[in-house]
Length: 270
Length: 66
View 1 (tube, one colour):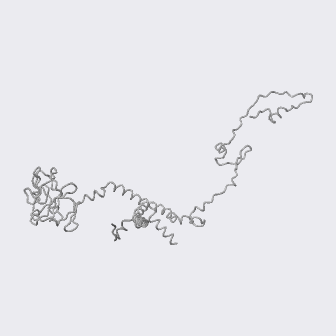
View 2 (view 1 turned 45 degrees about the vertical axis):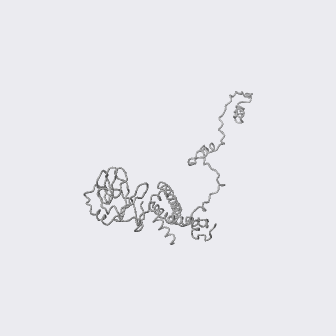
View 3 (view 1 turned 30 degrees about the vertical axis):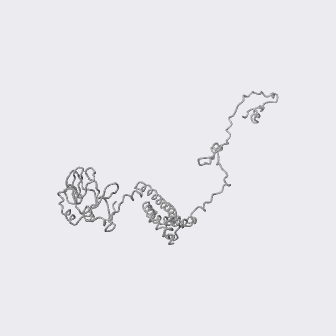
């Protein structure tokens, strides 16, 4: 706060002597002046308040007497940063068009991205594989699921029952007569028409899942109305020498599992 | 400058379009996988030399203990 009466300017005015003849000079009449307080502009200390002083718009030079002039700040001590260390060599020369080296520079960048992408694909594949293989059967379960059968041990005309995945498996070594017999069956007679050749890979060996398609009993081999066929004792379904349903309540032929011959005498079921 | 031309050709052929870029990455992942797996496998065998089953299998010990 500045108390106005103390200021030199004000005092000069106050003490001014009116002109007149000397006789009239007497003590100046001092009129008491009430104290006037002037709003002091706030001190600018913080960066925000200081930043308000910075001219934001383009500074126009005003030619009037009272007009403010250009505001200048000294920046001579600031160094201009040099980025040439970070720049590609192709764009350092001022006399060469940078557009000409564009593909070359972009290739370098994209190669880095591409290398990363290839690595990511490799990693993603490994993750997906680990997840998917987790869903599948474990190796020990897969090993149990296969059974190897020595066909040379089965005499001609005999049916052998093997356990496979908890189910009986019929393997029958058929005689030539039986093969001819099954091949000659008229398909129109069948409930579930299937050729004998569709049901066997090697006509000498018939491989079937020994579960009746009616209600899941185990049929008896070499029994029933059909020679070399199967008969289900539960409800009297008759299957022929190719495991096809011929008589009784069962709706479908005996199931043929997936199997493959390793050699002439060995077959792997599963 | 042949090198500049080569890089320009590669850039225009592969990296310019996202489709070819992705395709190239997927295709290159196969040889990369082969190489990476082979290298890491070799390294593993190198640092575990003498401890692996393959090393034992090759030469069954002739001397029978007990």
